[in-house]
Image 1 (spheres, rainbow, N blue to C red):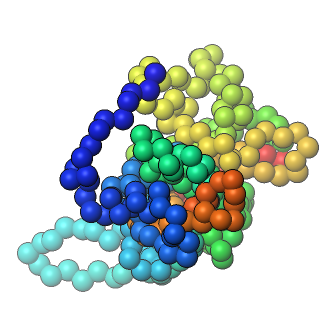
Image 2: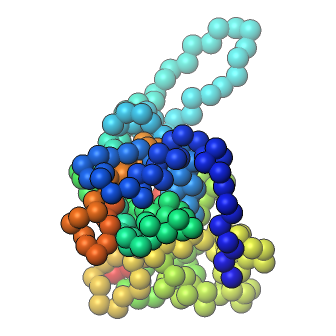
Length: 319
């Protein structure tokens, strides 16, 4: 049952919201874009956080520039210590480098009917906001995994995954090879976990598709006979696998018998491993003519992403 929209006076809206709603409902607006008010972009950002699995666990930073520069310690050396009364000179063996995360234009093209725009009781601004969120979330999910880094964010699975002679400064992801291209066993899961350095475990999580999760649910601990998957007993709390939360991402590969080599599971501290950069502003352009009988909107924002710590992410490869 839906609630009736409360009757609000024009004074209850801020000037930019009034202008935005007038823009949505008006007709002579083709060729003129508008910036969506912060009230709505904040709502879109919150919903994107819920709808985009990788965004929910990665590091997200707002920027006003077209790129975000991140300084990386390639050797993984700690830069902390204790101050003493004596001056102590230490040798700095760290190797610093810079990763530039360029922002790319993400677009969404929601459509609505003329009748919806003419309906004074309809919350057209919320309808368009929800459509933008769903479309952008879908595009982001794929890009954060498979993006080429040229016209979109660089995806995690776009990097090479090595299963031997791993070097921490090689810009590759360390992986574990499974024994069968459509099966996963208890030992493989443990091996992937053991590859992750202890300092990353505090905020680690599993990333997999629902198809893979359904299979993992059947795996048991070989010593105790208990299932390694534990269902959450509270709402809004993720299920756990071997004690670590599971994040479901439908864009991760499913189990395939005929696929030569693929990665169905990632495990790691994605907050330390993957950086997302974005400009919060969303531009909107209205086109009431070229998509009849609908009115089409063209929404754009700038988003980038890249792996910044390869040691923080591990992978399971099935062949």
